[in-house]
Image 1 (spheres, rainbow, N blue to C red):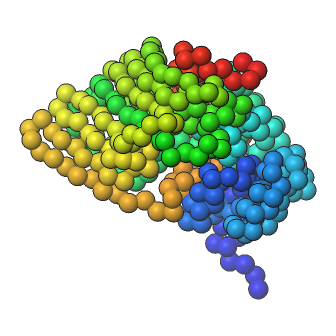
Image 2 (image 1 turned 135 degrees about the horizontal axis):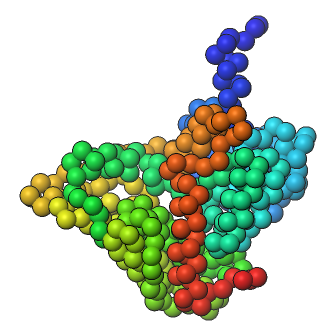
Image 3 (image 1 turned 90 degrees about the horizontal axis):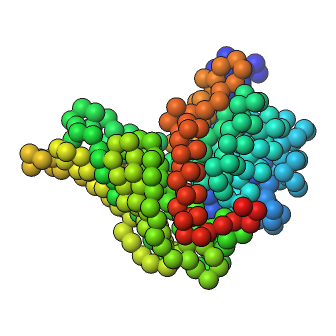
Length: 342
């Protein structure tokens, strides 16, 4: 039977994904992809073959690559349009650059790389090959976050001048990757990227930073207290691995303030309190774990790309990823956290 024009068009716009790193984040990515139109898992690769095969079985991935090169090179790589990188931060830059050099668009888990220099190298490679590189920073794509932005545009509280956000998680098992320096671990790298995004998104470009904290026996930050100055105001951020904290966020402005309730980085509820006494409650549930929103945005960028290829997202532009990397690097180095090779 001859295919309809709509079926042919859908097939031509299908975004086929290769997965690098079949861990926790990749599982949530697969969960989200089930509700993203015109997207499919095509192959998976991991440094642990058993985990890669288990992932393929769980999420019905048709191919398991034995190496990263096999994931991105013909014949298997010919059936892959984009690579989602969900490995530990120590390998983000290496894998992103290899995938881009092989002609694949890249969506990379946060943080984009270990430091600002590595992020510069990734971006330079993406631009040289006219390919899309985007850091997977999910909060701005959630329905609640978008609705909050729209609401404040229509019923403003004035310019946000102070941001307070953070999270400490003492429930992480001793073998959790954030505990290991050689993997690019620590609370600053594993938790604070979200807080850095929030501060930059509401307060603008980063100017100065002060950091206090303490290190674990393995040499990563167990607790970090970060104060930043931006063009639009100041932020107080925290991240930790051996304490518990609430995980909400505060945006303060002249005519009111916003509480994004926990866990603010998977935002569902927000309360806006105005100086005149009004209180507005926003509640926007999310579906499929939430990774689907950033993935759908990425896929649409590919479909809408120019003939020479898309380069960056207007919501998570390269300049934002560079600013986040600069903040995180300054914070951890102030505490003496250095990764192998730095």
